[in-house]
Amino acid sequence: MPIRVYTLRQAARILGETVGIVGEASSMMLSGHGYIKVIDEEFGEVDWPLTSAFTEEGIEHLRFLIDKTRREQS
Image (cartoon, rainbow, N blue to C red; front, side):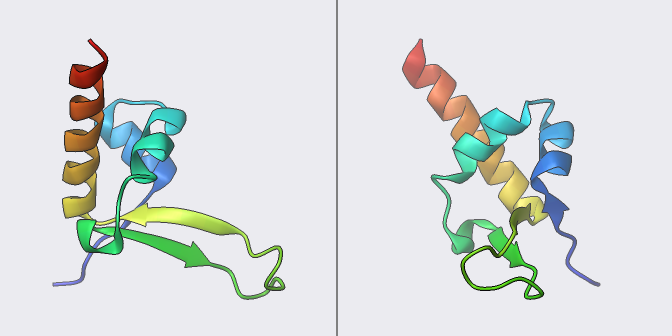
């Protein structure tokens, strides 16, 4: 079965969060957490457009990080 990956925007939709919140949470993730960066090589090294993508495990880890951050802030 193929592995599905979801863009940052789609992950935000799945989680019911804003792109900003999901983007902030993703900055705490490693590739082992189901997080990857997608690079379009058509552009040069300096201006490669990157997009974040997440496996289903990655989305669950995002949910954990967002919940953890909210608990710590309250």
